[in-house]
Length: 217
Image 1 (cartoon, rainbow, N blue to C red):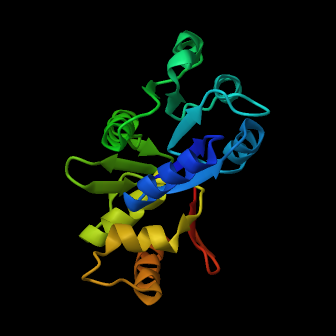
Image 2: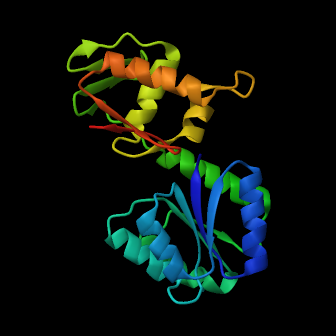
Image 3: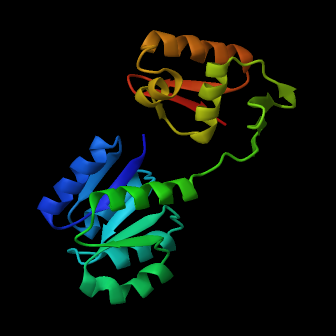
């Protein structure tokens, strides 16, 4: 699930954007002022920020200044009116990645968003602790030993390693491991968790009750 933060004080426009993005499968957290958006960014990880510039409490430019100053490298697109365009030099200097001028075409917003997400997609490092990934050959080593993994076990372990020390929700696991036709289940997830525990007895995989699982490394 790709998670987006939307900052827009025009409620009608904001709700329209939320509907558009959620119809495309994105998860959207929507805020009408910069203070609440900033608080949310510290509590939750997002894949992309959509930031209006002129909003109450903390404007979009100052918000991105604060985020970049805190080491947040999440890609950001500014939603700007024609009169805001002169402010964009500061926005790009603060680490903005793109902008789109209101009123905008819905397809253009989606194209820009998808292109930026694709450019900034985080690749897994080749080594994570004792794990070493060979993505070309879909192989994972632990402490120098090649793990004998089925395709789903490889996808599951790679998912854990891309969210190392973070909770991986059950919904995300189901989406990644099973198609709608296959129909995964909580029981099926447990089977694969137990298989990974057998392969990796030294590695701690925690069951976060009713939420998901976490690999501790």
